[in-house]
Image 1 (spheres, rainbow, N blue to C red):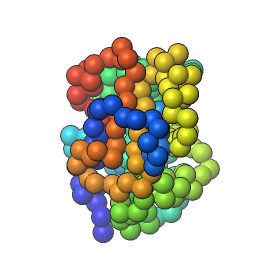
Image 2 (image 1 turned 135 degrees about the horizontal axis):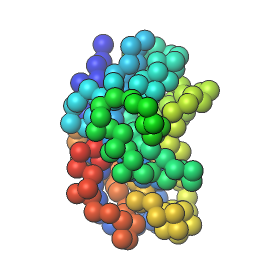
Image 3 (image 1 turned 90 degrees about the horizontal axis):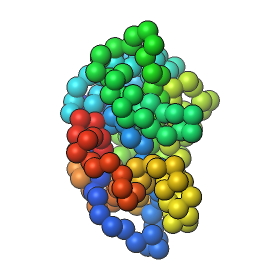
Image 4 (image 1 turned 120 degrees about the vertical axis):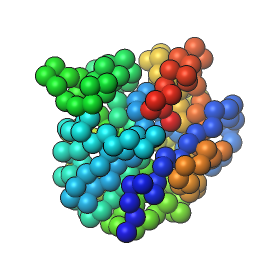
Length: 209
């Protein structure tokens, strides 16, 4: 049976991309801690560096445990979101450094963008859009603290101009629609497109993708 340790996160390249090139989908890039998660009754959250973060975010583990459908493994980012849905990395760091929930802690959201194991079966070799469709189905109905990251397959320039820049988001993630998931590999099939003036990536060494 697959285990969470078998699935270190697939990593992004950071380079220019031609928005006119066909075959790509686009997600909003959230500023958070990259986490993979496994549930089969019991839940485990694991950071990009392999640390067990389950007790750091117990509300996320609680919601993941209530997702029906047998063993699954997902990939995503744990974030603190403001009223506009923007990530607040400073509040996330304040929350995470205590390694537990505490009175007055900022609530976190697990922004899930990929499904790697479904009902105990590895599906990493299926096309990305097929995995994302299965993820959306698995995570219905919606549960507190869990957000399935949507995507766009057209007009990325408009998304960048009307959402990323005015809301001062970090950027977009471009992914080939037919890409497979390669655990632990920095793949040219996933590309971070940063907003000009966004905070340098060095700030995010501990948990960023």
